Length: 376
Image 1 (cartoon, rainbow, N blue to C red):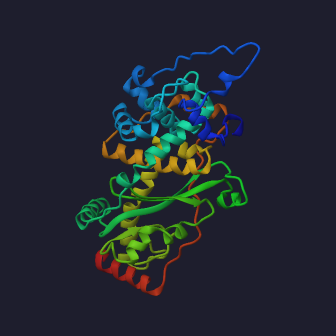
Image 2 (cartoon, rainbow, N blue to C red; image 1 turned 180 degrees about the vertical axis):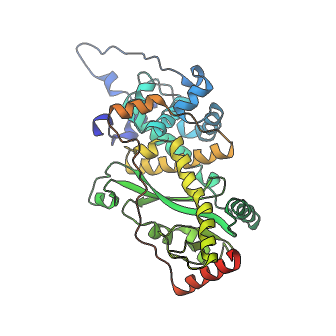
Image 3 (tube, rainbow, N blue to C red; image 1 turned 135 degrees about the vertical axis):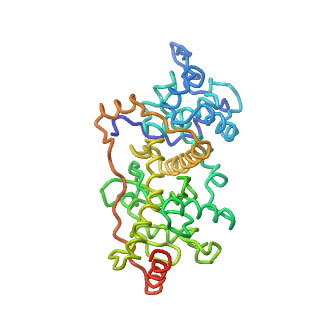
């Protein structure tokens, strides 16, 4: 895969200043015997030239969503001058969106004539940081009793499971080796480098909470144990409701897991309703990765940029869900590219967990009483 993807450059800040006109371009000032001829490239403007359907297939969001997002992050993308012909904010946004669709510097740089792969790297970084900064307002756990009541009702309508405020799970996002002495910490149980990302979904497949900083070798239960959401439940800032998780999580009064060996009708009914309801988080991951295939194909950016990309795509996912932006068609150009380069399209990044367990005696007793009360 490395033959087809460029590494990010360490001198990003320096190149930013060159592109923004704050420093001279060293190539232009080189004292050559034969002066370099300046090339003026025609950069296509897909926002204006592509139809709505073609734009959405290529960039994974509608033109309306792209415009809204640009308005929110424009200050992150503007250059102090027009020296050196910098990309416009819209062009930079499209570079970021195209990378989220492909995970390929090669495809992304080829879509805009005359844009170097170094410029693509910088655009991806700026766009991802800008969109990720919106997360505190767009990725929000239900904070009030009224908000939680609505979410609980919507979950109940799906699977007749009472008191559910979210469904929780983790997924592995493939990344390149981060290098350094801790690199192997990012190698997961399937043998590839990844980030293990935890999300909590609501009944409408909105991402209500995301934790995207843990290495691929870390277990799901460890991520939750160290999360701020767990602390809120422990301090009873969130009460009279619970999350649904699989058996990778330790059973507690606020994370209900299935019975491993259901013995009664109530326990079997509990498990059936649990499966139907918890499926929302699996569907959420499917929708998120279908819209932004780079999350499935793998991120070839630096570690910090990869973290920003994951959060940025989660923000965009929520914006699209809330705006009822339909899922785009599959990009045939992208499929052909990955088939040609023999990259796995169907790699399943969900790595089985062995940690978790059935919890302590009080938790077991609580789940048994809960099943008997609501599912007998």
